[in-house]
Image (cartoon, rainbow, N blue to C red; front, side, top):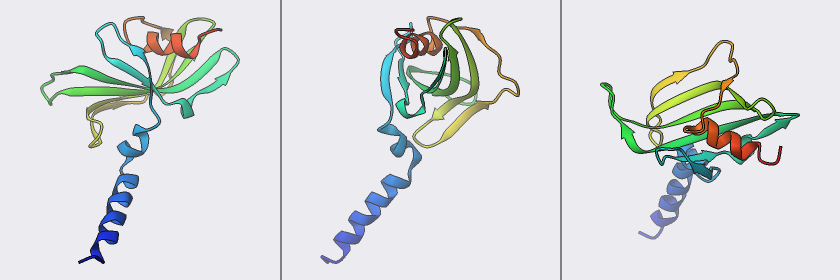
Length: 136
């Protein structure tokens, strides 16, 4: 049935466009690794610079999932603001994923009043700060 092929192709294209993980997959740029070897990615379209402050969305894919009583955590995504001058970070939202591709969230945290705290060179905050504040 040749008439069904174009419909099938259209359905595949529409399905891939409507899935949020597929839409985001092309925007992530790897910027380094944590001390445990987890790749750290940044969404270049999310980067906003104002003086010494840089806001960005950062993603970590765990090389080895972390076991929890509710099931394994496979990664995280954070919306954060980095203060390049003071070398601090304020996380405005943090999501821990069971499975990011399926949209299965383990935990989502949104502090009412995010405050700046230290950057740790061993985790995503240190990798991201080094990337977004390079040359500042």
